[in-house]
Image (cartoon, rainbow, N blue to C red; front, side, top):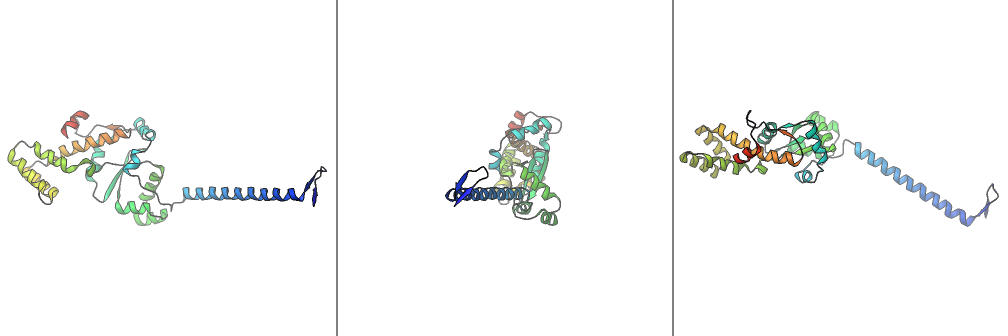
Length: 242
């Protein structure tokens, strides 16, 4: 078999077969590429795709350029950061959106819902409008997890406060409270009985502020040093207080 071309050239049947096979191969490859492209677009925009929440390990490996951009746009309140660290419950996790300066707290159930496969409508029905917005922030990589009480070693902070009490009898009462059963609850009752709750809050907040400052600076985020009223203490003073 010989194929005669218009120009008068001829191609044998043995040549046509490999060319036809080559054309089929190229067509199949193009089809695979298009299908993969379509899947990629669907995954990127599908609201049912689970979004992994940021972890402290992720934050250590995060490029700092995007976080540093916040320093040139706005400063976050150190007081608000510390308040969030103090008030977050054991079943909650607090985050900072470093693009907006917004503080966000998620319960364990909300975190689980975000990591599950489900539509935005499902999230709205179960938790309201907030979680779909949070999912977008997570997908954009804008959330940083705040330090926790565990990171702050709160027991050591309480012990340090007790040792700073000058009156030996009061000091021993406080130390006994934190070393017995239900230590934190006993400590809270004792500081109320001794009338030193305000002093404790000041010492705790200053110690948390030292941790918060290190965390903010490690991510290149600027902050307002507004932790102790209008005195604007220097970082070195905060470090000594802790």
